[in-house]
Image 1: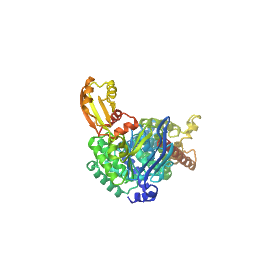
Image 2: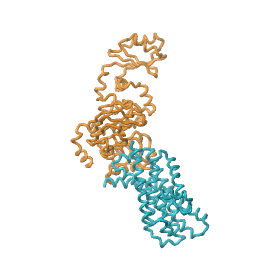
Image 3: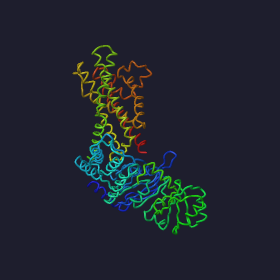
Image 4: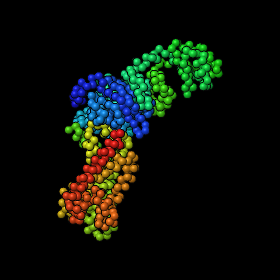
Length: 339
Length: 245
């Protein structure tokens, strides 16, 4: 888009490196501090992940960055424009895909896209061409003339993302893009996000699916209770646990004392039980299974399965935030696990 | 130019999705007929009463047409978050809200002329200055629509929009001189009539159609325009406070 290119050129000098800059951002709702003094930057062309459990402050942060909420304190710069006092000043630079598919149920898929394009001032022929192009990209051509209200959840999500990029924004905010949809649609959406990033769009992705963030993002910020607890590249985040050996043992009759007994007898290893009847074993040195299994069976438990785990971002998240894996899993199940 | 493309698209979309739906069109026709019929039978003074009833039926058609649809559609869009899509678009908030109310204003004016068309079959309306009537209709529609907008911003549920609208609408039927002269109201209620915008719109219509106005034309227009501005500004302030948190 020539206009977008012109806008970008005007502000280019201000945000060569960082297209989004946030300093000391705070937002309170009556007595609740939703976002507490957070600061971060997003590089131009980066796919930046904003990761945290439900209620951590992800959506509030997105709302402040996009102009749907006013920060109590702090500075937001988007594309070199100061949005702190005038939240709507940079809206021409951004596309937003909210966590709910919020297009018009009475309009067809094609009409919804054309309408969204018109909101950004695109001419009739221009918006129709772009709508057709996106329907093709998102494999929704056959549903183009059907009403949005009759779409499946996955189709709704795809069309909502298409509406978010209808005006080719240089920055895209994606709030939980794959939440609650089927596996195939989620996979397709992740591919579309990767393609958009490949083409140079800066993407700000919020999700509580850790694996999704690990697969897609270059840098990640962990947020809990309104505070950023860690921010780094995936490689750097994984560095401290890279050499670790992790084993997951499924067993019967798991009791509270077993972990303590294991810790006392195998002091070089770390044991953690979960509610699924499993014990997670962590060790710097390789884990030899035989003595471990024999000890567990001597305690009256039967080992059903033992599997080696690849250290993942999930481990880092647990380490950094203190949030149990079970809690995250429950959230996933609630949202309709699709990974 | 780009802003105007967005403006017209919002107006067109609302017309297509809400105002030109068959149930709303039929409601816009049936509602004035029902009110005319009710007062026609009640007055018992034959066809002559149609002309007397016309200003009141026009005003009530606009009031109910605009406030009902606008408050419900805006509350509905806010509830399902499609309104956020509009707030995220690079359009000044003032223009966005004018676009959002444009369809309702048009719908209100169209509603007002349904009883006029019907009345023209039964009574001679050739001596009416339609420019004055149209302008009055326009300003009543604008004021009523902005009242609907104010209601929509105040409530959060669709059903609340309807009940809260009635809190304003039903008293206005009796207090604004639609069917009963303000002079016949108890003295204690009369000041209330003059703090409601519909009183001034109805007075213009009564003056032009029945030569029964109580205030000069210019004063009525001026006060009506001031009400339009105040209601629009109050709605904008409320939107900024409640919807852009």
